Length: 365
Image 1 (tube, rainbow, N blue to C red):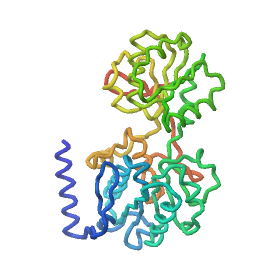
Image 2: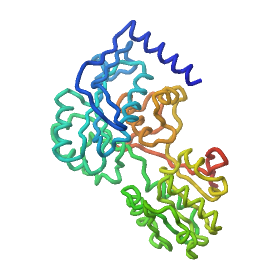
Image 3: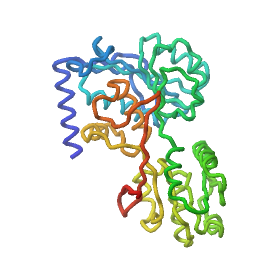
Image 4: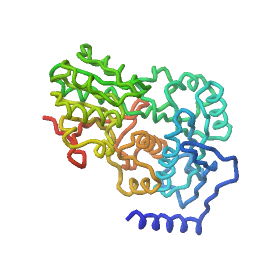
């Protein structure tokens, strides 16, 4: 089936070339995630624009993608593909160019965004962390740009930012609040000693004043017998703020040593089919996941799959998709359910449990 879609997409692109124009100028190559090399800018010209948008009515929807490859390299590839796939699906004229700042130093961010400005881009997807916000906020020359941040939520922005900033990250805090509705007794947390692990740890500790077990999971350790056999864990509601591999090992050892937990809870980072293959069904019997990714148009999802871009479980890709849809159409085309209000994407949080081979939504009374 996938080969059939590839043939269809190939025919679609060939037809576009015969009637219009696809231009990929010879410029300096940019290396992003996984040592993949891209030429920039990428230009695709196709038919009459769909929306009455100022930039589109001028003949071309133009968008820049800024990312520090040494910081977010693994996301760079699929973020670009998310934007390209969406704009191909819209069957409209567009121009997209990627700008690699390499890191998030003040000079790198400043020089990169000024290059974006000098090339006339007014719509930007900035795949940067919150460490860059102070720098970006002080660059007055980008005041006429709309800048969308897929990796930053409004809650972590210390919101004194420009009105042209839109924050698109999923809120782990809201997800934990939803999960904690299941907690009726003592609470426990396992968190990984990593940047994301510490971030989740701090959110959890702000929400739960009394944590019976608050356990660090070292990245170098895969034997958790002493941890999971801790008598204090019995009948606690355990929040797993660990990555998929660590979570899978912990779940299997909790089951193997017959730890009598209450609910085991985890956020978006573990809502991934990989966890179904890394664990046995019995390991996950008490496990509840939080998920904020909505279903998108089936045809758009399939096109993105052909570009090796997952928007069903990868929240960074999904957030990018929400962002380009907002910048392109103000979310008026019905493809994306999420709306933008007061400079942030509004996400719902749903709870799921797992069957032997899939996820099912948990319906709460």
